[in-house]
Image (tube, rainbow, N blue to C red; front, side, top):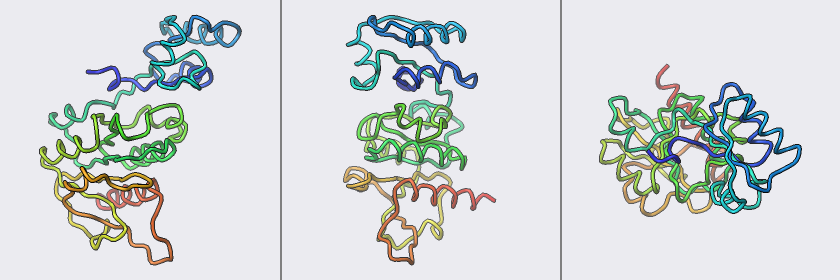
Amino acid sequence: MSPKDRFLTVYGRKPVLEALQDPALEVDKVILADTARGPAAAEIERAARDAGVAVARASPHRVKVLAGNGKQDQGVLADVVVPRMRPLDAALDSRTAPARVLLLDGITTPANVGMILRTATAAGIGGVVVPRRGVAALDPLVVKASAGVAFRAPVLRCGTAGQAAEQLTAAGYGLYALGASARDTVFGVELPSRAAFVLGGETAGVSPEVAEQVTTWLSVPMPGEVESLNVSAAAAVLCFELVRREL
C-alpha cells in the first residue's frame, strides 16, 4: 500500500503542532527542514517527543516536495495516520465492500472537499472516493473545512475519477450522478444494493469520461428560483436522504 493511501500529510507549524497535541490522532512521523530553528521548531520537537513520534530532518526543498505546497509548509510536515483510508480496489475486493459511496469528480475547492467528507462521515456513508488527480489535495485546508473529521473519514483512493467509475461499475455498482436537469430525483429513485454517486466539479460538473459511464442522472428538486446548489450542499441533501431510507 502506498504511503499516500495510509497518511494524510499536514504542513505548517500550527497544523503539525495541533496534530501532535491531539490524543485522538496517531502521527507517524514529523519532518523538519534543516533550516528550521528557534522556539517554534523547539516546540514541535518537544511535542513530538512527548507523543513518542520520531522527528527527521531534511532539506527545505525535500520538505516542500513532500508537503506538496512550497509556499505554506513553513519547513515542517507530519504524516497523520487515517485509519479508514484505503485504496478503492482494496475496498471493492473486501467482503465488507461499502454499499453506498460518493465519487468526487473534479472538485477542486478544498472547503467543498472537507465539508463533503464531514457530511458523508456524519451520515455513515461507507466510502468517499477521492482521486489523487483532478480533486483538491487532502491538505490542512481540507482538514480545517472538515473540522478535523477528514482524519477519520472513510476515504478511498484511486488515480482518477474515470478509473474509479470503471472499477465501481465492474464491481456491480449502479453509477448515479447529480445533474440539475435530470428527471429522476434523489428522493424518488429506486436504488440497487450497491450504488455510487458522482459529485461533479464546481465549474465543469461531471467529467465526460465519467458521464459516459453513468447509469442514471438524478436531481435535487428546487421549486424556488435557484438554478443549482453548491456541490457540498447537494452532497448533504443526498447523504441524508440515504440516511432517511434506512430509518
